[in-house]
Amino acid sequence: MSGILLFSIITINLALLFYSIGVWSERFSKYLKKWHVVTFWIGFTFDVCGTAAMHFISDNPFDLTDMHTLTGQIALWLMLAHATWATIVVKKDHTELRKSFHRYSIFVWLIWLIPYIGGAMLGFGG
Image (cartoon, rainbow, N blue to C red; front, side):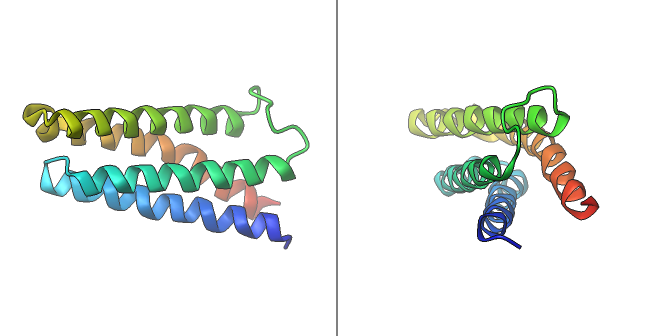
């Protein structure tokens, strides 16, 4: 296994870990806290690093006709929007949005799982 592949696998799994901790702890508390936002950004950063590393391995890294690439890009953009919106909600201390934000978080997390699971299946398949 190449070093860049190992780096990518580790960082993508760290993205899953941090993003899941943030999303699920927010879901259980039903209130968006500053530390949740921090975990969203950490998860997003690890995902970007892992995705960038995978781009170095791929023969055609920007092929949006490839379902894994397309869903991965959608997930990254949703994660960015999610973390940005969470940051704004916490900074403005919008109480009602902080109480309902977990609904959007779960949606983004579920969408993010599509390329995560797809990538794992591709890795196991060849």
